[in-house]
Amino acid sequence: MKTPSLPTPPRRRRGLHLTAMVLALALLFLIDTATRYEVAVSVFYTVIILAMAHALTWRGLIVLSGSCVALTWLSFLITSYGDQRAGLVNMLISTVAIVITGYLACTAELARAAAHEAQARLLRISRIHSLEGLTTSIAHELNQPLAAIVTSGHACQRWMEQDPPQLDKARQALQRILGDADRASGIIARVRKLSKGEPASTRPFVFNAAVREVLALSHAEMQRLDIAMRADLAPGLPLALADPVQVQQVIANLVLNAMEATALVDVARRTILVESLQQADKLVFRISDGGPGLPAGAQEQVFEPFWTTKHEGIGVGLSISRSIVEANGGHIWAEPHAPGGAVFTFSVPVAPAEGEA
Amino acid sequence: MTDAAMVYVVDDDNSVRAALEDLLASVGLPVRAFASAAQFLAQPLADVPACLVLDVRMPGLSGLEFQRQMQTLGLQLPVVFITGHGDIAMGVKAMKSGAIDFLAKPFRDQDLLDAIHQGIAQDRARRLADADRAEIGGRWQTLSDGEREVVQLVVKGLLNKQIAHQLQLSEVTVKVRRGNAMRKLQLSSLADLVRLTEKLGV
Image (cartoon, rainbow over all chains, first blue to last red; front, side, top):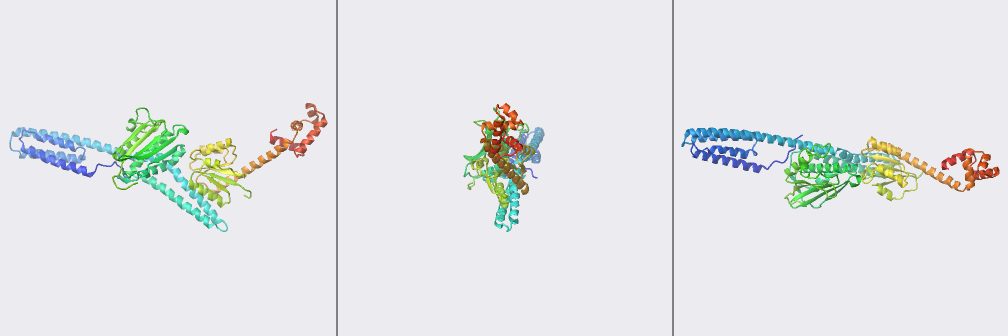
């Protein structure tokens, strides 16, 4: 299974970085060569290394540092005026500075890469986790059409066995069986889509349809917990521009949280409201639960890693949700719900395309 | 099934409901299906032996809760539970509260039909007993107070003489009242009289 990742910055920006780097190197080399030995221009190579620390991999940083050292030495050889001894000392100091800077940048880059890797892994864990939370629901959701198929099959058999066989009735039963089989395979397709470890792909998609798919999968669990769920999805929304699977993962996560919170209160108060709407150039998903609500002042904390109010929670769901939403160009926030409970809201950009949902 | 009967199906899943309706129709059972307990309650029940096939989990009111509510509403239908995700605890609870059977979806058609037939038979027996009780209750109402007093002492095993003494009556009066009571209740033996009073709880 491929590890899903957050969307990376566009290629164009990286190219721009590299061009700027080459120009800066060339400029610095010319100045260094043109100035006297006593002027230690080559120390400024470290600035370039630091500037590129986030744009290059650790291998790239080693190459860059090596190039800087080579250019420093080349300048030393080409420059012909000034105090050569001072120039030699300057060159050595610059070399040491460049090597140390390069080393530090490499270490930082390696740490960043490791963090990114860990985050990607957490992302996958959370996806599996949210699917796990929905397993009961999915099983029940799938069981209904299967039960209907079995019962219709029996009925069909009995119509056929009558004398004379009731072919019309049997045909109707078969028709229902086909419809229910379609329904079952639709559920499986939805689950597969959610669990697939596809690399991130940002594309326009119908926001409400994505919301509905997740809600359909959580339907049975809502029933099991006696939760009355109301979906208030704004019609005619424009397409969203994000990774649909990741967005669904965030939705699933928020829905699961809301269900868990709501299940803690009296049956009469177990309500969840799901809304979608447009705010300027963003599409907004909002879920309000009737649970016990967040502790005072925890609205920001909930998104921090390993912060949780649940007994069995590890506190990564919301922090991952925030990473996903922000990587997709949106925001996520929490507010208290007026009659008690919590409201979680996130936004994703509207696709600039001409298509209407 | 020679006599009239009716099966009520309450399940919120359209596919399952349609399939059940068709299955029962295929074996010639009259059936009426509803998407919720509220819809079911909104309809007047047919005056025939019946059985209720009830999904345990439904939006609004769970099947188990509904079964409890039926008692307070005076509904005495036998219930066959069907469930999508039943656990043992739930099954035990359902059976303890008097369900005919507890079937996990998907179930064998014969299991369901057997349970339904058992439910209908049970309902028929209950209806007959009810009618019977109503009839003898009516007969009991025709007895005079004096005759009832005598009958109540007779079934305790007292002799006519003892009854006469206790009620401060002559033995002849006791004999006459006893005879009248037996005639009005259309009974011929003391044993029948004992059974009848037991049935009536008097």
